Amino acid sequence: MRDHWKNYQTRWHLLEPPLRPARDVVDAIVAAVGEQSSNVLLLGVTPELVESFEHLTAVDKSAEMIGALWHPAKSTQVVRHANWLDMDDSFGRYSAVVGDCSMNALQSAGEIDTLVRVVSARLVDGGTFACRVFERPDEPITDDDLRIGIDGATHGNFHAFKWQIAMSLAEQSGTPVRVTDILSRFNRLFPDRESVAEKTGWPMEVINTIDVYEQSDMSLCFPNRQEFEQHFAQGFREFEWLACGTYDLAEHCPIVVAKS
Image 1 (cartoon, helix red, strand yellow):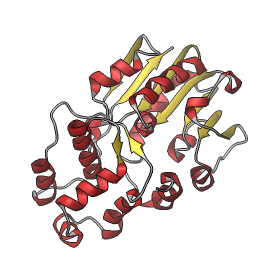
Image 2 (cartoon, helix red, strand yellow; image 1 turned 30 degrees about the horizontal axis):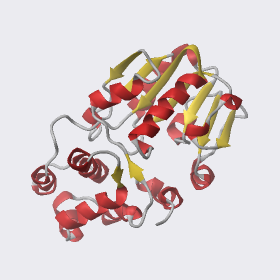
Image 3 (tube, rainbow, N blue to C red; image 1 turned 45 degrees about the vertical axis):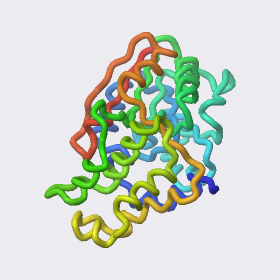
């Protein structure tokens, strides 16, 4: 097996929403934080969010992702190389914590619960947590749905389609989903990539980004709304969901806003 993030950062330039936050998503997260932007903790090093907060501490466990994506514009933006789950009192407290699909990048439901509690502990009283999530739909995505996604008259982008495969696997086998299984399901259903490219118009180099999953040690979590609410209840009594964006799969990528 190989470290997922060491290879992932080399394909960052080929990613688009939903795998990167669209402008309206970033704007919605900034608006949710509002006047509490004086001291922000970012889960990860998402460039679009780094650019949006002047006083920011970013935390990421991947030295490769930090090396590739961390380009601060101000001296008040700093990064720490650490695991989110290990953010103890030495990290201090923040007026807001933000992230882009950080909850989905964890390895188990138990890790989601842990991170919710850690985030709650890192917030000052009345602080805001705002994070986009990938939410598994209530109606299961079937193999026939996936085939229609290729053979039908209209197509979203490849990354949205890839996440539909992942959400289908999560419904069938439970979460987390090993990314090697996403690759295997795609290769089984669509063994002829040239045909996929011809039918959909997706560039082959974009389709081939799925090969980063080969021999990867990574798993991803795709809870549904009810499961996410059970997780967030571990650290927050009140939270709301914001629908945001018109990009492909946006209907399954809401922003959760919670107050400490």
